[in-house]
Length: 609
Image (tube, rainbow, N blue to C red; front, side, top):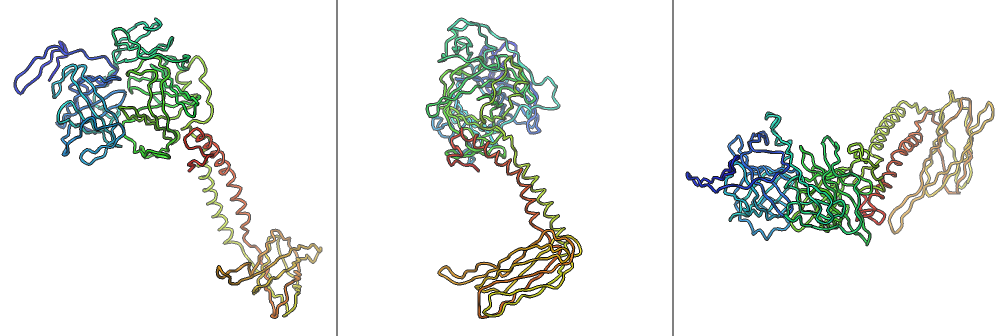
């Protein structure tokens, strides 16, 4: 079928015959960036949009654009709320189950490929323009099931029997633009605002176009259906109205996109009889569609819907894999709308409730929202309040941040400190090995001290020992002890001035067998390091004590100069580790504060890995 763009006449071709169905309804104005004869490219194949089917469902509109590709294929470009999907019709080998058998979040297989059901809608056609491969008059029913996998998208059209199947993938607006196309290919639709009065309080309101399906009054809190002939009240707020920090119509530039604030929601969840509130601002950018700016206790996030299906495991301590990043389950709650202000492209109402699962991987937060008909995913990125303030320049200061947000980046990134620590450790090891290899370890004297059988004491005086320069000196002792101890009183005496360095050392070695097997304790050797011994002539006096045994005992004593010192090396490593350990401790304290607001507080034994 084809619809004339001038007179709206509808022609349907049956083989060679043409049938005139009369006038087609006018398209509802919307903010679609596409138009008929749009030239784009998808995966390096050019295409042209030759038709549009505009569909309405309970909560809004979306467009299905019919596309002719340069390689001869015919496909569809679906878009709504800033998301795009390119699909092609496919015939399945297996039959599809009835529409009623699908529920959001369930896993379904199409010819063996697993998908997650994300949306179930009973839509109807509003209007058509251009060419379509089937007859679609206004009111044409189009019940459909949308499914997603991590890389693929599928749509099941139950308007016919058997259902039509369309397979493809998600795409961003940038991914379907053709660099060779004229610069005016993407259009900015300017819809004409319509003024009216609030049915409840008479305050002036406006709707930018027919795609606006709900308008929240900032005076009385009523939510109005602007497309109803009697301006029906969808819902009324309960309690005191809050004034948003960012007024409707505020404009600002965030992350390279120019946004306008067109709507505001206040949401609440009740946990253990306590109410927790947060604010959501609906943003619109002509070249990027819709986004959300979310504020909770002074912390801000820029949120956008995701077109891919994250790989999720549900339940306590569950996780999500999305775009090569792992997200941990943070909390589950029931979120309810308690105030509406501004314009929305779906019939939002006070009291509307969804179940929310939040998964975090700072600075990102991935949220899954379950309703009766839909499972939707939103990816949020943490924004400093100063960035939001600089972008929108509100008349009043934004609320100050309180506590720690779920996906707030830690101010103490201990990772870089550990990286620096590792680099310094490697350098210290290399230097220590170099110093150890060049250390002389020169033996300047060695001898034996003997204790006769059954004796308990022995002594030794060395001849004069020359130490040519100040440095360290190690006294090494060893004895063939067997279930015996040996204590030595050492005195290193400077012959020129009588200065004496004294120290006592004990060696012991015991072994045996018990019910647990053989065992040993102690050592047959001992090393005593004197870090700083001045140059000069010295004698070493050794007085030894032991227990009486029927065999002789000989202890071997050795003096060694310029021994590599490892104690300084260990002290250096300890000193280097103080900064990363302190950063780690601060980071852990930050994580405890973060997870205190989750379903798994760390102080209660939660998952702290």
